[in-house]
Length: 112
Length: 110
Image 1 (cartoon, each protein chain N blue to C red):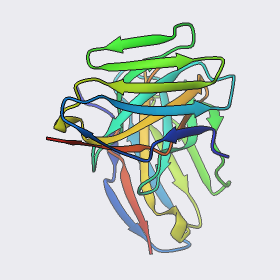
Image 2 (image 1 turned 30 degrees about the horizontal axis):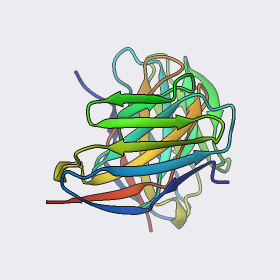
Image 3 (image 1 turned 30 degrees about the vertical axis):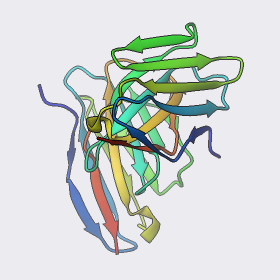
Image 4 (image 1 turned 180 degrees about the vertical axis):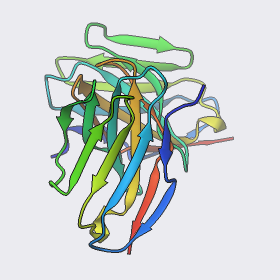
């Protein structure tokens, strides 16, 4: 069985550009969350979706947005990229509205 | 605002020893407390989790101790092995939110 898959695995963008990161949850999982992990720090909560509705949002600016599609896959969009947005972006999924997450291996975003 | 505080930042333990990592949370609405293990280049992997209706949960060599009144919980790794060397994260959350600690880098020396 495939785990949580994220694409792309690595990405280099220029300041001011826009980026879209994609996530496919484990088959049957209806909840998806996005996290930002800066090197040497813990994951920071960005968004949580369940059944295609936003259920939670962390302390990130409006430049960050996300959505969940009918097949439960998800996209994270970041506009007007800053150097400080360079990080590992992790997607995680779980079966229902509660419980532990299974994480993907992440997308490494570098903003230059 | 750091909602989950984790200590120590790093920990060195001899093979066969006990590793202990501590966490404290602030939000009393949190009702789920997992621990994750992360190896370099990988996403965090769920190790063990507890809900506040019990004070301890054990799975193999891993035990969570939970103190609801103090809003603290800890991970004990018994008989620590070199393969346990990784970064460990505590987390606290509920249905709509999950916050992570800053992580503890564990090194188990052979």
